[in-house]
Length: 586
Image 1 (cartoon, rainbow, N blue to C red):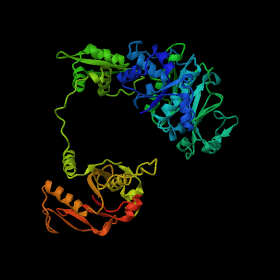
Image 2: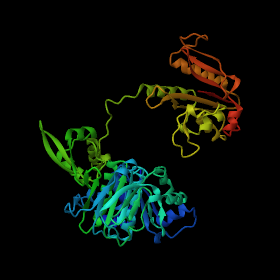
Image 3: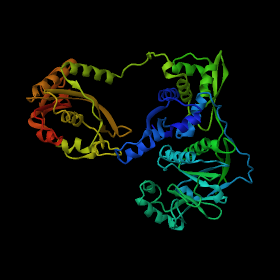
Image 4: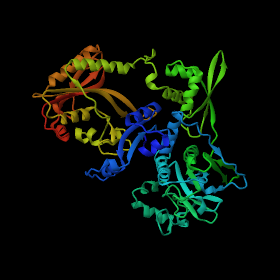
């Protein structure tokens, strides 16, 4: 969930009212967002720099960190949050966004060259005319771009936003793809010219920009935007040109979004222009730009039209579990920035016609409308009920019965991470390293590299972290492991496993053996001679994580289902334990 940092005093000024912390928390809860933290700007800096000295908080600006839903791009800045809360509190009508009346002949144009199709094929543009920035709104404008880049833009891989001072440029514009050696300009915050390939080398040491270089650096052509005078606007998705950098004095902002995903580019452009058109001389009005492709196709952006959605009143009431009249539902939706009116559908039933504005790209389905009704109505006001159709899965029901039975045998349940390091399921268990046997993700730390294939590492680490606990220790876990499975469309399958461990003054081998027998007894499986497939039997095994001669495999109806034994000292040493006499079943 994204967290947006806003100045408390500036937010309250935008809301036209001051709140106590508790009052604002209640308002956030009612609207479906959360006040995550209250801090100060200097405290944030001290934390980042690991400084211990305290400042005088009375002299520091209070910062509210507000957690917002990941799909509410309109709430990623103070302006969006303030406007949404004003509408929710009925302090403001829902804004009506319009395009300025510009003739086709005088409309700015962006000409797209065919070569761009091989690298970033789409571009959308718009202009914010007669905008007035102060330092706070300017910083918010820049910060919104960064948040969108990290969120819907997927770190600029899907969409890259460029903002420019239009008064320093001359249209029409062109969007091209050229060899890097043919692109030469002064990048933002620099004073000398670079070719594009020189920039790639230059920014490899830049902490912020180096993470975007991979998007285009191996391409034979780089995307680039020019104005009529061949002034470079930007080299997307890396850096804008210094020539058109916006400042506090900028009055006309040209916004371009290059993309590999046109739908997301439209959403990003709409989010930028709708939120900050509030600062334009003509409030909520945006100047369109025509995008012309080489094959003659042309499109005018942004598209600020609201689209219509019809939702059944009975669907809303039934899903939420309330009985609201059509007028109540329309009033609640209007508080959530959705224009709503009732309409008859026959048989004395009502439908709700909803006009979804360009700011609400998250509304895609009637369930999204229903959710907004529930939020505005108040989750605490919805009567609690037990759905009649809810029935536990057979696997979960069986797992709960197993938990109860093992707990009655004196074992305590633990829950451990489903992710672990690759060595914890291999070398630390005296097994050969083979990453091909585990599901590997995109690890950020060495502690969470793969999905566990056994419960043993987690339960051993639990003992290792509780060495000082009085002995004996009897713990168990019922949880999932993930194994590679070519028969599955996703290439892997989940398996529910049981693990139990005894740690005490003696080995406890007989206690674990007894637990195995008890589990088999309660599930109705008899003990049979080796080779008999009508029940279960145990026989000698040779697993590397257990002591030789002090372990056994469990076979149920001809299928190996588990192993128990005394944990090998080398395994205990690998998990940094000084414990002796550990018996374990998996």
